[in-house]
Length: 408
Ligand code: ADP
Ligand code: ASP
Ligand code: MG
Image (cartoon, rainbow, N blue to C red; front, side):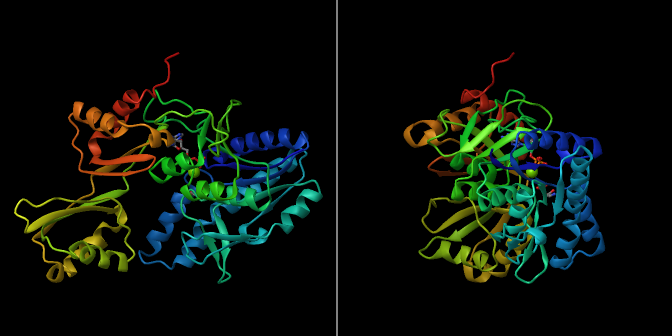
């Protein structure tokens, strides 16, 4: 007998037929004698609709009321899944976040789980019942309902698995595992048997939305073994675990991309000590996260251009901040562009292999794709390119790094 947390995403619970399918899967595991807590998302599309309602109601809506509205989607699916389970003879009950209780910070809209009280779920297991828990939501220190940011049900599931000391956390979704890159973009993407926490963390934070970044960070911190699987097919999925458990280690494991960034260039900045600090201090003070940075070397030694990226949704604010500080920073003018994509190759093997970056640069050059900004870490290389070239670049790199699946 094992203790398992199983999470089903939006497409997997998209209608009653699919919820019945999920119930059937849970019954199978329940009949094998396992203790099961299930985490569910809202039906696909519901959360988007609820967010639109809030935006329509007011462009400056109260974040606490936003959470009350957008958390509603998961309330529907937990109840429906519990009903479908009961219908096929599996004793089950639903739990909203506060009933568990999943305690979070009070940063409404992107709260962090701080503590989970497991007593109610332990009681459920004792009574031989399946616990069906609403993902994406919790309760803040202010006693108000909170949500965990888009894709947050993954994080609910992993946090629950850690709190309940579960043997495994199964994440069921609409693809049958983690692929070398998004299989919807690259038909030759290859399913991975396993991926290390570190690599998955980079893949998720660099754009692979198959797992929410925070869920991977939690899994790594608490050593939760995560399995990504299909809700619709009975095929082996992908294990996300520590380096000791993952045998398959290529130099490059995967390619991710995100269009969520925008590029700002400050033209002709006076080049002297302290200048960069002066540029980035006001951005930090307004809580704008700067990601990639490049400073050109000036020909005349007197002035230089500084380019950096910020989250796309912060571009307007970043430009305002830069313009407000134009006098003190002293630059000529600003250029900005949000039609850019950050493309990354990821792999723990990079630590011990040279030439990985060179292959990326050569491949992009061969396709005539210009690189705007580059940033690297121990296990990843990221470049900023024009968005129009995304698919071409991802496919070319996928082939260049030998990641293409063998055609059947
Ligand atoms: P769910 O609703 O089940 O949480 P998501 O839509 O959040 O599902 O995540 C699954 C999607 O992630 C897939 O449909 C796929 O298009 C996308 N995806 C992006 N990168 C990858 C990758 N490397 N491997 C698998 N899926 C990926
Ligand atoms: N329903 C939420 C969302 O769409 C949470 C999730 O699906 O993980 O973001
Ligand atoms: Mg998701």
